[in-house]
Image 1 (cartoon, helix red, strand yellow):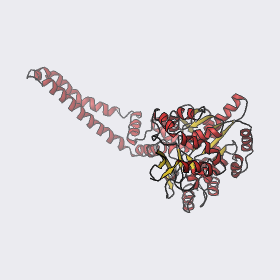
Image 2 (cartoon, one colour):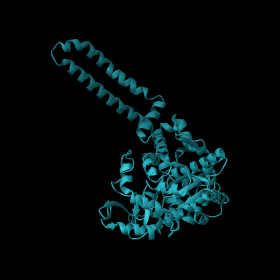
Image 3 (cartoon, one colour):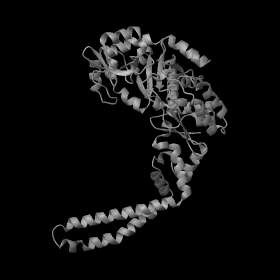
Image 4 (cartoon, one colour):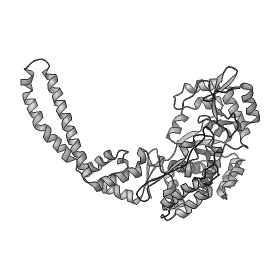
Length: 475
């Protein structure tokens, strides 16, 4: 069944070999992500690259194949979270591309791309057409992101082609052929809902766990209908947010006869993944790594051993123009913060210009502090309470002088309009919308400018040597 799924993604001898290895019982390094528009943020690419290089390393260390597998999180229903993609600045301004969102609580596996996808691709083309490798990348996107294609199909098609040389295997759990294989996991999640919930609620509450609620979602109106969490009540389960009550008999009959009417939650997904695959390691983002710490009781309830959780590589992309600007401002990439004002202050200090404000503060306070110290004995002699009044006055003046000199420093920083503009562009590039670059920008600008394969090879190389810190990757 997995081979049939992957046959949709075109020819890849490396993928065929990896599928054969899995059939022979090979271990897997797994990662996964929601199927975002145009592959979503850059960290999706970084997670994939980390899984690939880790599988290579383990294969070499163990002397037997270890296969990279990407789990397509198509069971999720939060379409609004994946329907937006930000494109890095090409001609001065970033571009946000988004698609209309309608309907609620339906797994994205059953949602298709609307007709508006054609106009969004045209917007992308208008922004990137001048770049040397735009035609190749845009052509690939157009082949897969087309009206009527499902979100999962489009995402998987592009990702599989990009990593065909690495033999990346993709797995879409929302496949009718897989549904009977998921039923035993959902059955245990339902039957043991109360003790599982109690055990999880004793762990650090990274992901909220409802009391007496199975970790499975139920689709009462069919696989393509809305999905609901269930809460145990006498004689059955009530839909959380839906209100209908379903008897035990209805739920267990559905598990036997309509297993596609069940899907996993964020906490149950890893258990299903590790029931189907011999997972030796899971490559996780920072938030995922935190909620994996909540999962030991769940794995114990299913009689499974948890895989090793490996953090994905974190990267910051620096093009020549960015490196040049950093050098001119005497800043490192780490010096650039989400606050333009803070970054500008660092550039001001790096240029040695902050000393003027410090000198001004010292001069303003010098005579006042000296006079206050000299007159303090006379002031204290006036009676009780003068000590407090003296110190209060000292603090008030020091605070006022500090505000005055900071206002002066800010005005001085903004006097150099060229430096202000360069800092603004650095912040937009490295910390767009106040977030790390990898959590905002998608792959499209970088693929169109540097070439898909050239860009991916740099990412793979950087992921192979990545530590637990953010890697500055020069392009």
